[in-house]
Image (cartoon, rainbow, N blue to C red; front, side, top):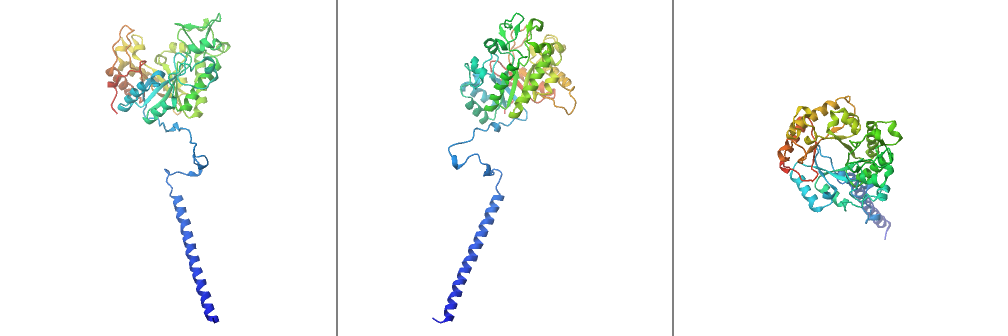
Length: 404
């Protein structure tokens, strides 16, 4: 073969190699560009998997349920649910059906009830010591929270604070006492001592456990002194000589909010409706409406018409005129909270309304849809947007609620 033919073959082979090389290079560059464009165009729904919660290194594990999906309704309209009803599939399903067919969008559920029992199992030293969860009505808290989430019902934990006969009887060192060292009881019921820091921390520990399982708001009830307590006849400890009842309740309120806020929950408290207008009542139970509102996210006055004395707000028999009582009391609340300077924190007012018949008073009427709707309308007419219905039996006047 002559040299020209050899050179021609070499040139041909080189050309083929060059063409293949250029083609491969172009393909590789196009692929990289296309991949970069795909990365740049990832939607927020697809997300950034660089910080994925699941990995193929441990594909059998999965993250815990994220209860942040409980979105707070813009205007909360709630009903109260006992621990026993919440723990019963039959009853909770009936209450969920009310929420699904009416304007109700939240439930206030007992976590620590009036008798001092905790309604679901939790690992807290004092609770374990005294057996506070032995009578728990909610056996599967995760299942309950799942049901509420699936039905878009906002969960609020009701935690009774200082009315705790179970704790007081099991731990007399934490109880309000008489001067002679015996346990103070009113109508046979013992109370925990609001001046005792160990009582505070017990309540906060329970609240934290409620937040951990998914409750988005902690609502304190009985955050006060027993109304028949005579301080001069009681032994409340040395701190009672330094701080008034109002001051210690304010201190607890502020402490509770600081402890719970890092968990991402709202904090609310129930107060007597009469403390809005009566300084005497406020001092007796230790609830300073304005000062508490400076710390809380929500303040919930219990303005049941049946609980007002005859002649309140110039109304002869309050239970017979629910609209007028609710309107007047909430107008008084607006006026009272106006004492807080503009720009400073002020709790949103969310009143408790009456959905029960107070047959034990002289001048009462049966409460049903009409009376419930009148109270709701009065709440709106006073410029408020949220409310909670109280029925100790959890039987509600559905006819007084708007359809969903």
